[in-house]
Image (cartoon, rainbow, N blue to C red; front, side, top):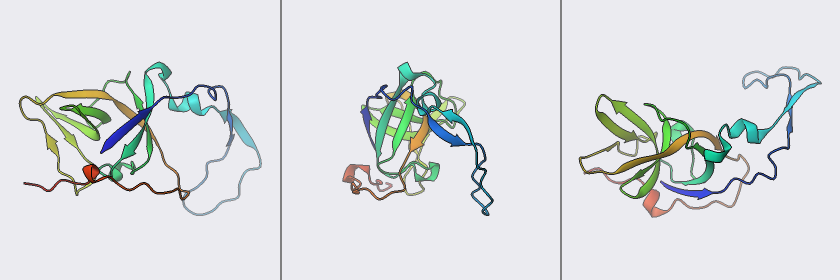
Length: 159
């Protein structure tokens, strides 16, 4: 899985969007309320620590079980302390990846959320840097020109 970072523009930081006061049910339809709640500011909602947050485009499908798909955009907060189970952007031996960080006692490993991919166990001598904690994922339901999953992002065969 490759990560392509890009900067967060702040020219829209003060803009707000309308928010319906009623929740939209994902089950059976219900009558909609005719009034709006206070508007929300997506910049404030997505970026709790704007100075330490960046966006990145994901390449690959190893995190589909966590709702992160190929070509999605993730918000990554470098100010957050990663915990066991956090989804993180990690740099392992110089290569970026998005995985779930797992810790048990002295052991640390990176876990994909797709059963087609193996768990990455850290061997002695591995260099792991946690770059930040993924806080949000943005993906579109509208058709876009699809970008193919590059061969380097496909699952490796287990030895």
